[in-house]
Every structure is written in structure tokens, then in C-alpha cells.
Length: 207
Image (cartoon, rainbow, N blue to C red; front, side):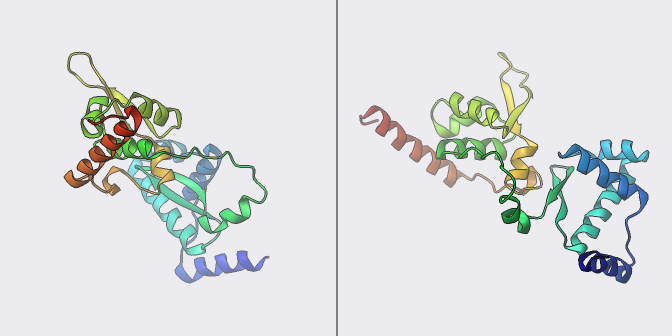
């Protein structure tokens, strides 16, 4: 038995906590699906109700946290995903050729911040704050998997509504929309000023 395994078992014995069968099932599902999994899906796998499934996955989160090993479970907007602990990232990059994540320009970050804070948001909502057309930024964020369509507004023209994806919350380490910093009037004004500067640079004339 390895020293790490003995240490994990000792923690469980001292705390009186040990993974039960439902938690083993949840761990297997999270590992196999390799994505954020809803409580409903976990309940279905365990053949139990959602309240029990949520209790079990949260218990499993505690056990993995106490073990302080390579794996952890992160809550992502009400779903759960099995992840590698950040402290082992440097070791992984030595052997894994990971796809490079796209770099986000200031324009994309501003647009993403607006969608995340005003979710769900239409293109008009975004453009009211930025002061310019935002089709390119919205389309790029969809392409990068950071926002997605969340339905249609029930008004003439039925404009699309956009919201952040699970990938957005996972990438930025935010549990859900309630963990987002708010875009206040001062920030909206700053974004508007920066857009005006961008436009001046672009068209080369006084606005």
C-alpha cells in the first residue's frame, strides 16, 4: 500500500468518513462523462431522488477535499464536474498536449462581462452599454463556447437571448451567476468611453 493511499485511508478513519456505494457511482459517472453533470443525471444513475443525490455528491466533495489528492469536484452553475486539482497542472502539461484556449481581447472581455452580469441579454442590451454593434464579439464568444442562446424575447422580432455557458463558469472559477461581480454605472461609463476611443482610432476623426 502506498504512503499516499495510507494517508487518505487514515483521514477517512479519523473522520469516520468513507465513500459509500452511491458516492462510488457518482464518482464513476463524473469521471466517465468528463463534463459538468446535473443533479438530475446523478439521481438517475444512483436510482434515488435529487435531494439524496445532491447530499451524496456534496459528501463526496468533502472526502476528496480532505484527501487533498489529485482530484476534486467543482460545482458549476448547479452542476458538478470532476477536475484535476490546480496544483498538478504543471505536471500535466509536461505530458499532455492541451488545446490552446483562445485569448480574449478587451472587446470580447467587455461583451462577456455584460452578458454574464445581465444574463440573459440581447444584442441590444450589449450595444446599449458598448455603444456600437457587437455582432462580431457575440459570434466569437459563441464560437469559443463561452456564451450560448438561451431562448427568444417575446417581443416583435423575437431577438435572441444569450447567457454564459458551463465552460464560462468553469474557466473563470465561478460557481454561478450570483458569484459574478456587478457591472455598475461607473463601469458602464468606462466601457462606453473606451469604445469611443476605439472608434476614434478606427475612423480617424472626431466623434
